[in-house]
Image (tube, rainbow, N blue to C red; front, side):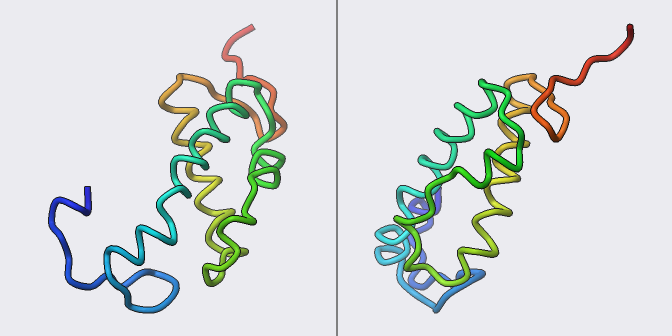
Length: 100
């Protein structure tokens, strides 16, 4: 989507001001990989804490403050995929049931 507006510079929430080309080179695979991982763990009803911890952050370790923002992004992605798929789990991975 950002490619459509072709920004001259990007001011990320973490890191230094950069160009679109550099930002894409550094983070291009992050969201697809994160979504793929979270799709699998939501499908398997894995607890959100385990899902966040098992995402492989090593390919993105060169980015600043990944220990802070990748877990948050992973948590948000997990919840978004739950909503998209209609799945809802307690924090321990068990499905939420309504009624008896």
